[in-house]
Image (cartoon, rainbow, N blue to C red):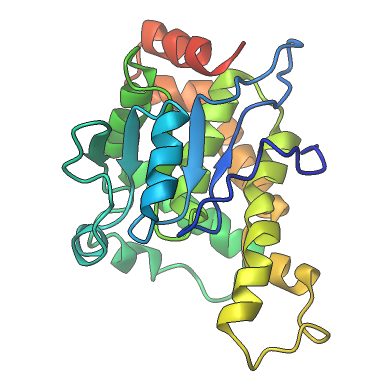
Length: 252
């Protein structure tokens, strides 16, 4: 399970809501993921100057922006063009894939709907996922921050794959995925003043996004189709050396 929000987990950076470190997660072989190596976040277009410096002081070397082309153009990442942090745009779902995701059967319940949606991305965007994971495996990439707009689905999927390669158990991966709801709940209430906290609880918020059973369903799908996360990594073209390098970069 995710710890009770280790103080190192949530990076309270002005201009973000959902920035966090994925260090400190136990792996199946008794090790743990490294602190200060892989960060995940919502969009960085509003990141305050002192927060930018805080990330640089944290050791940040690279930013991987998973948003669509229009998103990154309309809300420019503050590290775009930076001389101190390498910026990469990896269009996670593409600018037209949404049309395929709209063909998901309406009869599916929430978890199955989301599992189907993620499966479309995993199957149709293999080359982009390959490039993202391979980039993270390179020795000069980390410490790295991966983000999309809300730091939920696109970021959640890439982080889940990295944690899976690291050997983190499925339940922990799902709990990290679900942590987004906890970190965004107060912000949701602040930006939706007509919503009454008594009638819209954290549990309600969790049920609307990043449910742990959603990620567990996605991981089961990877197990069924590709013999797990590592099998998927091999299927999309990652070499054994790249997989080992990514694992070594993220695991103590």
